[in-house]
Image (tube, helix red, strand yellow):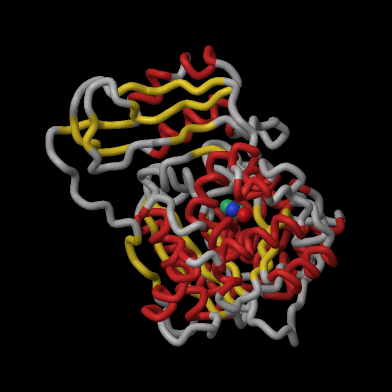
Length: 439
Ligand code: URA
């Protein structure tokens, strides 16, 4: 394989051979192919796209660039859920334990937040002692003993993706469906789950802003997963408004715990049940979606899912007392209420704007080296359709000191739009994407 010939072929709109893709990725991972050739190929893919077969070959090559975990022969089917990222998205912390309580094994490799979208690892690290740096054998042990483990990507899992993602970030080649598909799927497939369910977020605070883009990504993920022999499912869900009433890190853990105790905001609980029901159905542990919804609601209400979460936290070195006493989670130095400027009905809460506020409060990062404040964020956020009186809080800002929060009062207030009339009901699950024939 001559790297420049492969680049030229893609530049001119040709279809690459699987062997060439494999050799290219192998060369890039081991260092015989330099960054500039990989960047040129990524840009050619950005402009010319890839066929489903090429995308599957790229995914497979990236997956095989490092360790591939296997849970073959295990007593439980393995499954995982992946979200493309949102504001207030604390679903993974509940879905893993909930799915495990229903008979699935959930080996979950999660990521950190970047920009306005949060990351499950940062959230879980606000639990004192919780380790997100498990070795592969520790990870497998926790999955075997508890049914679920949530940890970070090790250097040995899909290293080609780690290298290529950093390169794409600085070469303008992130927003390419085949490259995004291969990046997400290579990590998920290397972690070993047989069933993969995707929560493709759509709307102003999501990576995919339009329904057409979200559908295209969902189909690409389903196609590649199907071609590589996995059971697949995908929902496109709304990410114009935040999920739940808390956005940040420790505050989202507290809200996830509330949900695991059978409470929590209705939108968050509903979406957790929908995605877990899809995992259970595709993973073969529940006969149909209706039964799954009913049984999963019971597992949230009677504490079975909470019990798995408690055991996972303990197994990963965390202080499980936070479950009974959330005040043991990191607490902010100051809490500042954002008053409603007038009486009205909440018509809209702009998730993007809330995400920007949380970032500036210290709850997010703009570069991968930034250190986040686990206690920073917003809570008690109003939701569309609720009535507020002038002066009543729209949300609370949580920060290290009052000055930092007070400087953001105006930015926070404009996130909430008030109206005289009730808004149309929010459709949180926009649609389910069914695999096409052959996906
Ligand atoms: N998430 C990933 O892991 N990779 C991408 O390319 C985009 C989002």
